[in-house]
Length: 164
Image 1 (cartoon, rainbow, N blue to C red):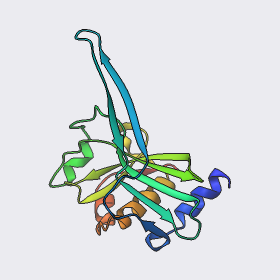
Image 2: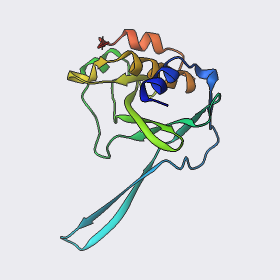
Image 3: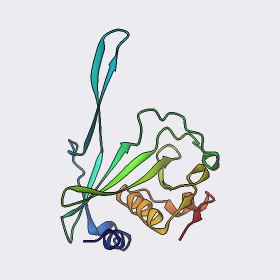
Image 4: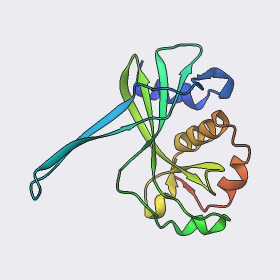
């Protein structure tokens, strides 16, 4: 499968096309980082993982994993557009990773907004407002999978610019 075909497949899918693994447990989509402090001679390993996984029902070779923070260092990010929401704090940028036959083939960013009551895409440009239709449809899909019911209201509150 070509990447553009995979993106079309994802874009044209709906919540019912995906089987979300809802049981608590490991997702087996993990990141490990080692660290050391020469000053005091200590070292260790930090661990992060995606919190959610969904499998494409028509072809289980396609999976998405999401929920892992993009960086460990994001805290209290300043997005001016978030002031449109009662809870304007955004603490971290999240990753959604796309896997084909177990291999990572694509990645996008998104954020939880309004106290995690909604999900919005995060694209390029100043404040992450330049997005593609693909980023938009993926964020809507994540919103639907997470039973967030007001995607359009949140999306319409932010001055996104579609690039394509």
